[in-house]
Image 1 (tube, rainbow, N blue to C red):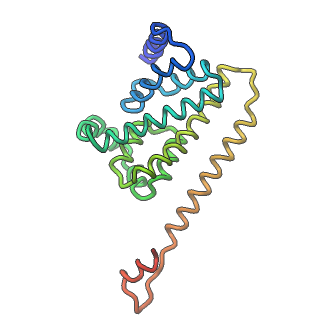
Image 2: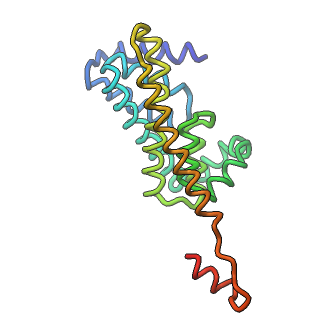
Length: 213
């Protein structure tokens, strides 16, 4: 099935006879479709971008398109097709119930983590965020950061296949450093959340909450 989809994408590109930036007229809609219902791996389009536009430009285009697709899925999940989304993905959402609770508590950091380590499908992450309390602005920047991390990882893995003689050790070192910084920020957030103000004997819980804020 996967080989058939990849072959179909290749045939579609050949049929349109689009080259250069005109190719985005095909790949961007396909990226948005993939971001909503995930019928084929995002890596297929990423490799297509890299082989067409080069490593750096191809990865940046994939990052922008992937972020746009996640935002579209988020908006649709909160608005016009909310009921259909929940019905179609109800079972899959239940599978990630633990991460849904984490997202309700830590919001943006869980979005970044799940997109950086892609073991949860992108559309499920968008839907989980849509049914959480996260604000659109917070979702937007956390998705941009998380998708950037994901594209970076896919790019490092994919370039070894496309350009086997390319030395990407510096890329791996930079990527590990980037993930380390994100992880440290997450630990600081956890530490801040756990530092709660304990009420004094003469203070009510409501007064303590006000002080804590």
